[in-house]
Length: 348
Ligand code: ADP
Image 1 (cartoon, rainbow, N blue to C red):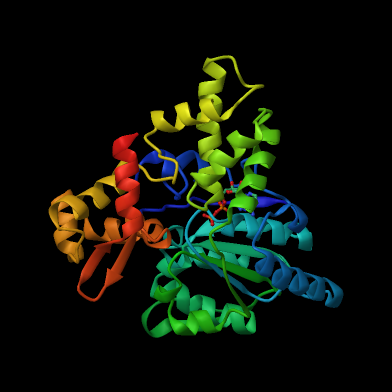
Image 2: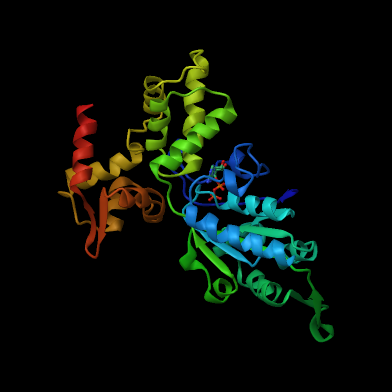
């Protein structure tokens, strides 16, 4: 399978580097295959429902000799959307062209992408909710009728030309399915959500990555990394790399135990629940200065010196998912589990 990649110009807020589910610059640009991505559906760990639905669709498309229907994958960053697009291309035996919406700013960017598409190719557009209006309108007929409508010339000499496109599959990925316009959403035949991974799947991912990186982890060390990675394979792989750094310096790459993992994680201020200093700061702020809430997002953001959007989209989701924070109509509130966690951390 060939992979063609073009610049992914993401511009989202970032958090502590080691726990940032967004790809780092090296992870995102120019290296769609980091050597750790599973290549086939059978190697793709977890997401059973997604694999089942897409597996059937791939088999059916192969059986009919047709292009796979357009697929929209949505869910938080780092859960395997790009990986799934590459897996689909591999299963279909076609080329995957990777790009992201911010790289398709000018109409000629998307026209260039579409005119070069080969029969049954897979076109992956990351952050598809950020496509501009012109690009979206060029995509509609391309997705629905395999037609590219171009305007040639200017002013009174302008004419519309239609170009027929080969059958192709668009795989769109987004962290914000709600921001997608409904005409665009309606043109996807398969819309699938990726879920955070459970402990067992994460342990399998960490163990697989350890094999690929040629490091030897004890079962407890593997469990520990899996428990701290916020349900996200990208973070699991990154934590393992940081643990490997410490092991490397200590000459212990072939015997990584839980103690070494704890050492490496505390170096990066990651606690056993996968919370970093920023998370704990938010919880402590609510606890110590607002009696546990409720407190409005803007007030909380101002008190922490953060931007409310960063807080809402980067810091809060994991705390909400972990039941450490609740959003109420009157503002954010701390839960008993969060209080217990803070006490535990203070005592440690
Ligand atoms: P997204 O596109 O959702 O941000 P990616 O597909 O880039 O996430 O995945 C991030 C990393 O996590 C990849 O490098 C890959 O190695 C790993 N990964 C993701 N999903 C899985 C999975 N199901 N099994 C094993 N590794 C995975």
